[in-house]
Length: 153
Image (cartoon, rainbow, N blue to C red; front, side, top):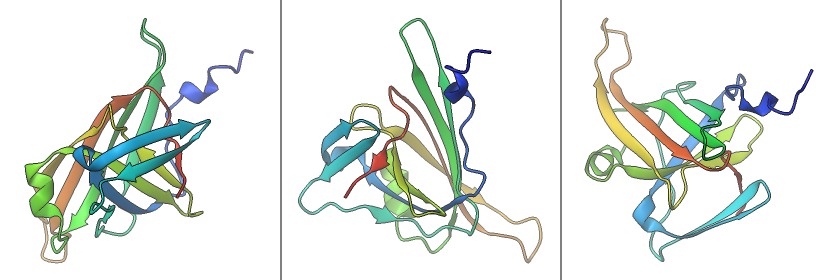
């Protein structure tokens, strides 16, 4: 059986993701890839904005597909943000982001690139019971030509 296309199956981290941060695409000055790693340089005063997330709410799906033009990765996902997250107001204004996320082993990856940023949208979450979670859901989607690379600092 040919296993050369196994990586095209959905890639999602069953162990979960523990942290996420973002930058706006307009804050990126350089996005360089070497093998499966990347280095992202930001404008002088820009920084990765760490999101205040509900535990175990980071869901990211990466799916490779092969249209006529070659391999393209579809990226989508959601993150539930606490209503106290300080970045909610600016996420509503500027929707194009790069997302940095870490798995439970502390490995950081970047979804979105300088040329193909993710489109982010916010929706309010209203609990169905008094003890339910109230906050915001950050939904993101995009396409890129590479699997989300490992971020090097």
